[in-house]
Length: 451
Image (tube, rainbow, N blue to C red; front, side, top):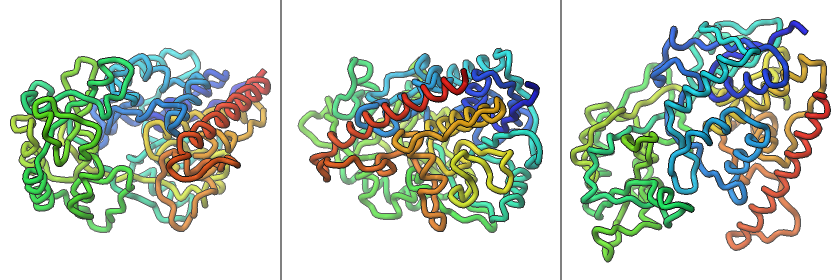
């Protein structure tokens, strides 16, 4: 066998795709334009660099859809999950990682693999020969974006994705703030104290909202539109939807008790989550923003406990590109117009590190199977991975298609179970039990085919 699989983009999806294909015995060329060609959000040339949050979200595989996706990727011996587990940080019930060592290990692992070649090169066209996976993510270069638009005959779709600021821990006033995970969630003391909480009174909250709404914002370029994904809204956009929106979102004051004032319930709470193993950096949870830098420091220092905050990174905004996948991709993630090309990751219309890596895992296995002369079915619909890929390649309404996180709303209902909030835990466990069985069967079948 001499045919190589070419993968464009070394983020979560591209890295996972390269690992899966190489482990199946296929030679892979991984094309990553960084560090020769930089982007707004990336700081390094590492593969799988985490540019927004350092969290892979919930790790609960019994009652959470993203936790089930974690489970499926671990069962498939995924590189992203395996590496994340080695660099995990206390985060309550979530899987958060020390982002730099995580990316360094993914990079070193792939560069050391005998079947993987990493090329620092920018690809600007869609090739008509060989098998390719494009996993260029939300920061697809303009030249490649134009090539995709030409090949698909569709206008390039875009929304804007904002990143949250990171604060130096030593600059947080712990005489005002305190450590606690919401509802004291976690099995260890470190997990139960994974977050730093900054309380606000009603007057402080109202003043904060006023400042947020009045702050200078980043302007859009001519011809761009602010079509945000609801799962990653800038805080000022949320605030503009209603003054109480943040109190029912990232600033909700529930499940927390201020030890400095145990008899006083905060009106709102800002949470910060540990961002590195040393505990020297914390990111402000849910505080993606498009405020200008000067305005950010002024507004965020209004938060009690952050009056003297020093910022390792301020928030920012960048364009995020994705395909209208229900129209353009088949259930094997192939481009209908050019079936030698697959897409994976956020460009397919999934949202989040885990979902992106999952689509890379699937695309890598499917492409490798083709090169090996085998027919590998796509992920079973009852698995978390299958529910997600089914949604983006046909289950969603193409006319209104927007990026999607994995969630139980994508799963086929389990008959005979109670609806509503009271039956939620039983339903969720039924979904994940069924998903695990479906995924085990798919992996077993794929292994038999590979043999």
